[in-house]
Length: 158
Length: 158
Image 1 (cartoon, rainbow over the protein chains, first blue to last red):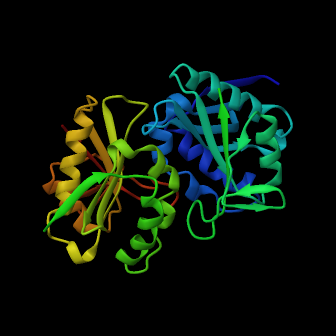
Image 2 (tube, rainbow over the protein chains, first blue to last red):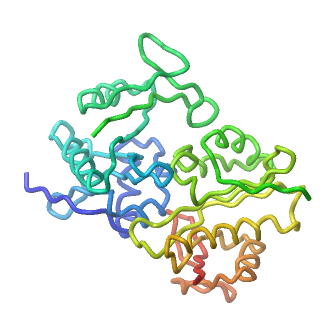
């Protein structure tokens, strides 16, 4: 594939928003992607294009509270290009970028029902942080992102 | 009033979330307050407490894309303490803090129907950026935060 990886820019907001709900089979995802993420975290967020079409993106940022830590908020891949290594390319690009800012640990979260995401993060070198419950062998943080929003919390040491 | 202003911390997430929907008369606001904001932007986000109760807070951050710019994402005040100068105290604290990081401009947005917010920002020294439409004398950016989400965009020069 003739792929091009570049930094996110503000114009990507209007391009990515309509894509994302489609990529998730109509499930509303756009509330997770407020415009400010596209404006203010461009140096640690990336887009992959193929012939000018966006087929994947990652939004992450440096933690201001802990200068040796970074956070990946969202990664989206066009379902027509799954299993093509795009996610891996985006993660690698993110890790290499934040390392230049002396980041030592990267955090991210996922839903306990998202088994594919959990599996993928484990393969990518993330570990699962101890939760307040263990459900079928999986450590889960109850109500982590608000009432009813249990999460699995990952950390990767760079 | 015996007020205490301090930096936001991660524990505030679980305390503030239930407050906010109440403060907005049951209107769902919590989707605007994901946990990562409470974890990663503590040095530029603040809480005002009175006798241990949170009665106001501001969440803002430094732009990574433009190092001389900062953004205020959310400000919430307990309606029982409106007109008591809490918002003003939070803004001032934010401006003074980001100035130490060599920030020159602060941005924020509001909905065009939120006349009180617009009035307040003008009083606080913000100007309104030129939009793509002018509705009854108000510059508005159409679909700024996604389809149907028109916004007024403010800037303040420090």
